[in-house]
Length: 341
Image 1 (cartoon, rainbow, N blue to C red):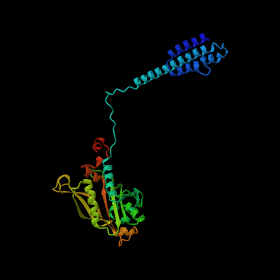
Image 2: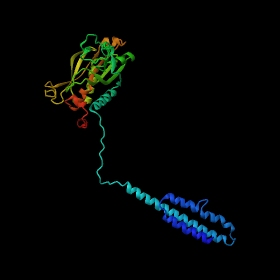
Image 3: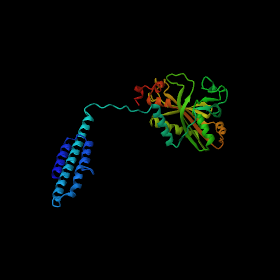
Image 4: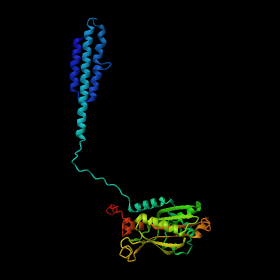
């Protein structure tokens, strides 16, 4: 038995030393130390030895087991180290090589102004209301005190979707105000941003597709002073505390009285220059007190409630905000332009 144990020790240690991967090492462990392994079989046969010889052979068998286990443990650590070295060599990174710059998207200038305006108005207690871009002419015109025959309803100005002109692409976001007034009782304080459509030829200041942000407030005791205070807050938040506004009379079918709101030219401060075309002022938006007929048509008693409304082109706001001279730049998707924002 001594010769058998010595042979197992010699053969196992040589085999373990020459093994090249962990799978083969595990196979050797099973071969010599497993339940049916060679060393285990020798230990099971010790019962047939002379009682005086058993302790000696038992001690030798334990020494052989210990030698094999140590050799396996040492080889496993060596294989693990070599595997890690190989992995590091394959996955090595040369930190001296210049990195690849990632291109990150930025907000479009229209989105910047949109978000700023929404933040300003929600800070004043307004909520955002949305409505369909395909609208009934009744809501786009009639309920806004723009009857049949009004120039604004001409086919040369509006994209109609039916032969009888009853359905159109909305020309303003004002219909959202009507939908809200029909379904909500005062007090009402909303803004309605979104896309609108008119048959305008594309040039530096016009586009058949553009965006508006309109606002509506309806409550008891609302006055023109509330309108001026709200719009002055908007202008000063957008263009700075030094911004100066001018309110001048105008006409809109759905407001009475109505006004145009101008901002003093930020280039010449009212002296007159190429930016303001020598006038010293730049037109910004239209506004006014909600016409009593509009209130009554939505089921709101104009003798009890009053309100104001306003509408501003977001493209115009963006152009003023960033001193952009050509509207088409906002839609051409030129990354050289958009990357500036």
